[in-house]
Amino acid sequence: MAASVSPYVRNINIGFSVFDQLSYSDSSLPFGNVLSADRIRDIFADSDVLFGYGENDLWNTGLTLWSFVGQVLQDGKQSSCNAAVTNATRYMLEHGMQPPSPDSGEYCRARHKLNAQVLRQLVYGIAEQMSYQKYYLWQLPTLS
Image (cartoon, helix red, strand yellow):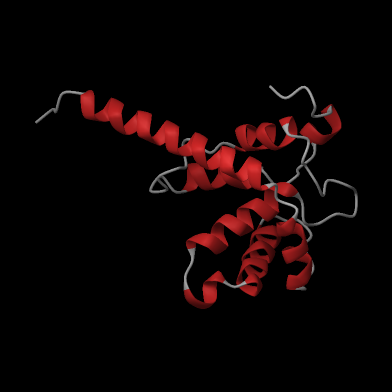
């Protein structure tokens, strides 16, 4: 566990819980079982690159990362910054939280704060774990 995350930061909703909610609500996501909120938060915290967990901050690391992943996985107009902000706003309202500003510039500035080395670490970790799971499943005997 990350020793660099204070109890205050760990206990407030800083946006990472969306990853657990997606994992449990949509079993078709290929990375849903390897991308837990705690794991993501700890990786960012260990690198000391968490942001946006102040009282008035609406774009925090977790929500920004979730919006960015959604933006990258979409195509066409759904891959725009405005669509990412709209999706984040919908999510926040559905969960009784104050939505971020509709200004996509704020989201883009927050997205710029996502640390590239930490994102690379997440991608490699996910790929490694999915590769292991695929290998493990390949080794199981088929039940027919």
